[in-house]
Amino acid sequence: MQESTANQVAGNATSSFTEHLQRDRPDLLPYNRSLNPATAPTAPLQVPHATTIVAMSYGGGVLMAGDRRATMGNVIASRHIEKVFPADRYSVLGIAGTAGIAIDLTRLFQVELEHYEKIEGTLLSLDGKANRLGAMIRGNLPMALQGLAVVPLFAGFDTTAGVGRLFSYDVTGGRYEEREHHTVGSGSVFARGALKKLWRPGMSEAEAVSVAVESLYDAADDDSATGGPDPVRQLWPVVYAVNRDGARRIPESELAAVAGSIIEARSAERREA
Amino acid sequence: MTQQFYVSPEQLMKDRADFARKGIARGRSVVVISCQDGIALVAENPSPSLHKIGEIYDKIAFAAVGKYNEFESLRQAGVRYADVRGYSYDRDDVTARGLASVYAQSLGAVFTAEQKPFEVELAVAEVGPTPEQDHLYRLTFDGSIADEQGFIVMGGQAERVSAVIAEGWRSSLRFTGAVRLAIGGLASGTEQGEAGATLPAKAVEVAVLDRQSETARGFRRAFRRMNDADITALLAEED
Picture 1 (cartoon, chains in turn brown, orange):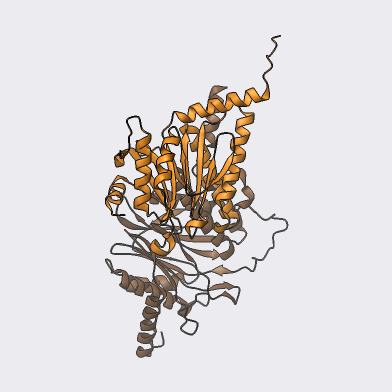
Picture 2 (cartoon, each protein chain N blue to C red):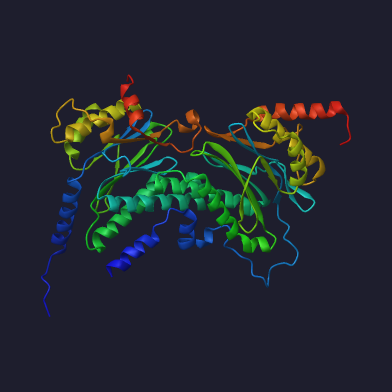
């Protein structure tokens, strides 16, 4: 009797917010609403999709940038969507795929990290954070099989090792550590091509911001689902830099200047591609 | 078959209350002070890792005295309650009043229904945009809840400590003054305590809810725990 009570207490002790929801409020989990295969539509649902995210390391940390467009089939669903979020003080994540689920997953992941920190009194290690995110993506697998996939990109500063690190995922929750740079989303092939030419080891933060904005510019050039810098509406990519001091959002004014100089340089060259 | 003796409900409740009071009176004290800069939470606690003060949510903190396992389970339950609420509604919908009422109900249920009451006393503090909008709730072992103004003192030597704090408390105190006052109060409650006594930084646990966390530091979370070096630096500052 004594032992079973102790076992029960130990079994109930969890520092994970997701586990707590799974047990007490499963209806609140974003991926717990699997569609019934009999009633599921054969064609993919027409829902907003978030597109290109780029991430890269630079001297002192990592940087992540996302364009501002969400598409629904051939229609632009949003010009203002933000797809790169701070996960906690030392990490950021960017999301591509079904926007509705992705935004809920991001919110859940942010609460998960904060919850652990409050219960345990310490931050989760960067690998721990990356694994938790992988588990959430795996939880979404049934929805992914029905066409509602979410593919994140995760970047953070490893405070113990003192370096910035990048992680990519597949829809089954597989977690892969990336070196130098990585891209996800519909425009990722074009952005990746640009990064291969533009990225150099040991760049400064300002150079990395410029490279990120330029690679998104190239992605928008060839992928209709990726939005380029928009001087008419004053819309610029969302860029976060993470280093030893934590995550910082690059201010709009800096991005406007960077995007402006890229557009100017391209116009001056008067080249087709 | 053995016959149970009749015990009147009054006697039963009195026995339980005396039991809980004795347990709490053995512990060291905790002080929560609302001031100009925010809310300062100060506990006499030599352990650097077994905390009596904790963060619950963006603007809400928790402080407790009594049995560690009992208040720790209440603290974790509070963090879960707040996180579920903030996740399913919105971050602004998590309030100290809601949390305090959940605590009051759980403590009340444990007091009447369980084998033994919880030997704890809790404080739930929420920092507002101005000192007038701060909320301080005190919760006792039987589930009673009190809305306090200015400061809360809990624990073994509450009366002696409270007298010192009441004398020095002003709403215009900065964190430096509030923490110094709290440490002075806690020192007067110790065995060899007398007026003007103080405690070393190692012997106290200090955390603050910063009123200006969003404007000054860009953090939504107002709670900040201070380590020994921070405490020493804070106490060295001029008022």
